[in-house]
Image (cartoon, rainbow, N blue to C red; front, side, top):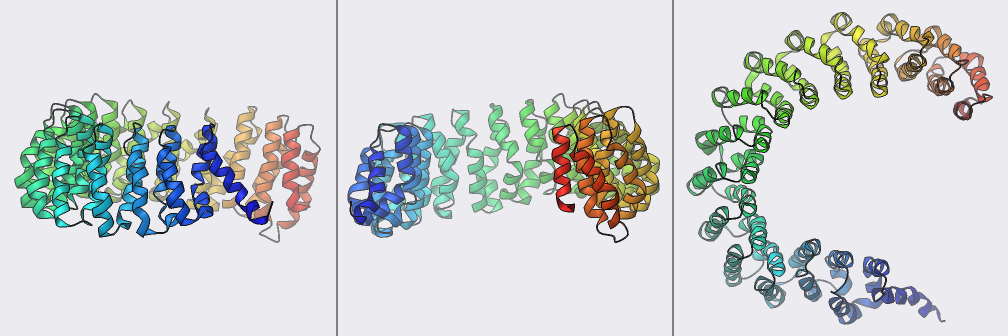
Length: 586
C-alpha cells in the first residue's frame, strides 16, 4: 500500500461508515464529516458528499440531528461563501422531517448560512426555499419556515421583502395550530427587522390576530411578541395599539396566558414606557396579584420589586402593598415562597420609614410561616433590608424570630440561619453577639444532623475571623475543647472538625497552648473514625505551626510521633490518612 493510500485509508473507512447498517457507526461518521470533507477537497465535497448526504435523509433521528448541526458550520469545507447555497438543499429536506429537534437544528443551521449568501444567491436559492417550505403540504415544513424569515429579510430586495411579509401573514393564519404557534414564536424577531412603517401596517395586524387566536397555546406565545414590538414603538404608539390587547390578555380565560403576562410584566412595562405603566398597567398588575390561579399569583409575586421601581412610592403604598399583605397569607405555599424571595427588594424602593412601618411586620409573618422554603427565602434576602433600616432595628424586630428558626425542625432552615450568622455578627458587634447568639452557635455543634455540625464548625472559623483570636480563645475554644472528653463519640468528632476548620484562623500560640493537648489525647481514642480524623486534623495544623519559629519544634516533638503511632494503627483508613499527613514532614 503506497503512503498516499495509507493516509486515505481511515477516510475510506469513515465514508463506508456513512453507509453502514450500525447507527452508532453512522453517527460517528457524521460527527467527523469535516475530516471527510477535508480529505475529499472542496470540489468533491460539493459534487459527491453533499448530494450523498441529501439522499440519506431517511435515517435515525439522532443521526439527522447531528447532520443538521454539522451542516451549519460546513461552508469552509465546500469552498467558502460563494458555494454556501449548495448546503441549502439538504437542510431544506431536514427542515421538513417529522422530528421537532431535527427541524429546529436545521433552521438554526440555515440561519447561520443565510448571512453568508450574497444578493444573487439569496434571490436565486434562499427565497425559493422559503416559498417551498411556506407552501409545503405538511405542517412540518411550514413550521420550520416561520423561523427563517427574520434572518433573510434585511438582506433581500424590497420586492422580495414585500413577498416575505405576505407569506409570513399566510403562516400566521394557517389552519394548523402548530404552524400558528411557530409563527407566534418567531413574530417578535421578524418584527424587529421590518422597520417601523411596515411594523405598524403589516406586523401589528398579524399580532392582533394571533393574540385573539382560539388556541391558548398560540395566545400565550404572543406575550413575548408584544414586548418585542413595543420596544420598537414610542410609548404613545404602544398605548394606542396595545392598551386594549393588554387588558384582554390580563383578563384572558386561560390561566396560562395570564401566567405569561404576569411572568413578563416588568419587561412589558419597560417596553411600553413609564407613563403608560403608571397610567394603565398598575390596575392590570393588581389584577394579576389577585388572580384566582396560584400559578399566576406566583409569577406576579416575582415581579413585585421590578414593577415597583417603575412607579412612584404613593402608588406602591396605595395599590401594591395591600396586595402584598394579602399574598403573605396566601393559601398557596408557592406564592408565599415566591413573595418571600422578592419582598425584600421593596425595602430600598420604599426607604427606611416605610420599610419599618409596612414591611417589617410582613417579614416577621413570613419568618413564622409553616412552610420551610418561605422562611428560607426571607432569611437569604435579609441583607437587603439591613442596608436600608440598619442592624439595630432589624435585630430588635427580627432577632427573636431568627433565634426561633435556629432551632427549626427543618435542618435546611437551621443551615440557612448558620450561613447568615457571620454577617449578622459583623453588624451586631461582639457584646450583642455574645449575649444573644453565642450560646446558639455552640448548640449547633451538638446537632443531630451532620451538615449542621459541619456548617457550625465553619461558622466558628468565620466568627474567629470577624471577632479576632483573643475572642475565640476566651469564648469558643474552651467550649469546643471541653467536648473532646464527651462520652458520645459524635461530640468528640465535632471537636476534631472544629479544630481543623479553625486552624487557619488562629495563631500558632493558640494551637500550642490550647489545641495540641486535646489532639494528642484523641490519638488514642477507641473509635477509628475519630483517629483518622485526628490524622487529617494534624495535617491541617502542621502548616500553621510552621509559620512561627517558636512553634516549629512542636511538629517534630508532638505531631510527628502522634502520626507515626497512628500509621501503625490496626485500621486501614487510620493508617492511610496518617501516612498521607506524614509525607510533608518526613
